[in-house]
Length: 77
Image (cartoon, rainbow, N blue to C red; front, side, top):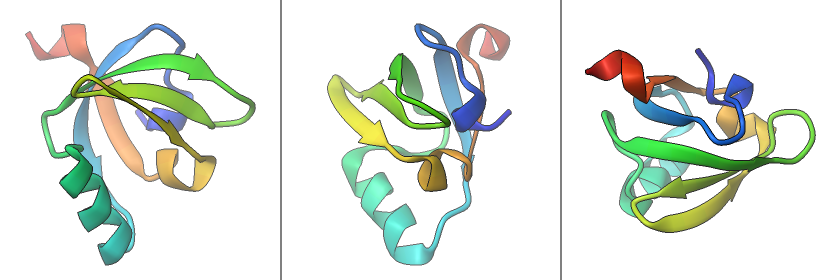
């Protein structure tokens, strides 16, 4: 599933990030790598999310969240 479809309060695991090279490298530098656990703290409109990633809160727009593939954290166990 795409991160833009994630539910508020849900925990997910990043499976794949398909963004332009510079943006993908920036997210990796911030800690968003494959198999990273994230929590959706809030939803703001269509696909705009506030997430918790490695203890830090981030706001991501729809153009980013539509390109991040995730699975539910409970599906990984």
